[in-house]
Image 1 (tube, one colour):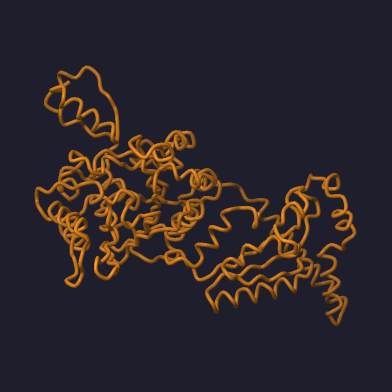
Image 2 (cartoon, rainbow, N blue to C red):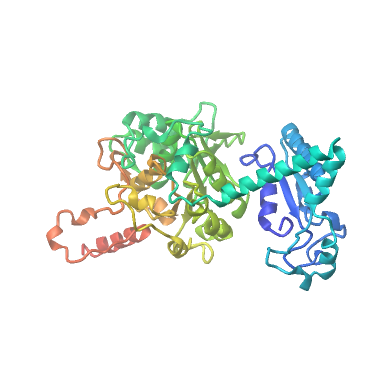
Length: 505
């Protein structure tokens, strides 16, 4: 699989990228010299069989250590060399652990039906436990002492096996999550929120956050279009009656968290500027090309390589490392997330149930059948709804019980302020769940898709995310309502336009 799975190449490519380097990775290949029942000559792409499984590591100049799995001491030595290399150079290194599977693909398999000569050789090999035991006996001055050592080792291994075998699977993961909050903390805990239902910010925090988003250094020359964006943001954020658009609301949500000391990371293809030239989190001096990150220090916005599977896998792991950070991945178009479907299916949808780990990875998937044609229109929300699962035994007294019982949350916000509260809620909760957002395209520049700045601050008109928003048109006409239409996202603005053209409905 090391030479066959595409994610290996993507991961190696990320190893030296600016926003993805982790100081080196030790890759260990369990090289059984067979792929299920496929013989070696049908798998390898080189003429030298010994390196067929790891040649791809040469693309990043990673050293490759070939070691015989039947020699435990050699394996330990190879691991020590790999660790020393990684610590010294901060780069990737590969251990090609050449061994074999005694029973084929699993314990019930009979590989002699398909791999005759290979397993004829394997069946005549001395088991590694026996051969290593003989080495230990040879090295020890006393055969009695060596036998006692072997006996003690076997006893300890059996004891550990029995203890694991006797474990009972515990329901839920709250205890495990609370434990991870205490480990490796790099920022304040999310208890600074007034409760998981309150995500508005103070006027002082609004002012501090706005300074990052609208302040241009004296020696910096902005692009004329970016200048207009900054001027519009300054007017909307610093005016008491300002109207905030979608991209500004998003940056305000993320930057306010970072200003409070909670790490925020957003990555994706073109995420610094935004696929639709809407975000502009990083500015470029038109004279020098120098970058200026118009965001707080604890916030990172990164343009990723043109990769989905490897990058989403990286961000998923990043979200597990520190539960008090908000990690987001943005697809260039929602359709492009198809390339990361394996991560969605096997990890994001079920990691809590399978491994009792919680992630707040937030996926921004631009969605809408408007322009750009096929493969640039749908983030396939039906797939997420099919994978959605919930525990019916949730506590009705807990306002967050329904969310705790879910494996992830899917949202299609309509108003910028509601989007703001939805993002901040990811760190306000005392638990973590992945969030999948059907992010807009046309709505980004819809003049009606704006929220008053009062919807973002304490004591204003909206203090939290609302699952259902009332239509202002009908607030004074409630007695006329005969039926209700529930919609979200761009559809609301389309219907609003139709109603205005018809002079009301």
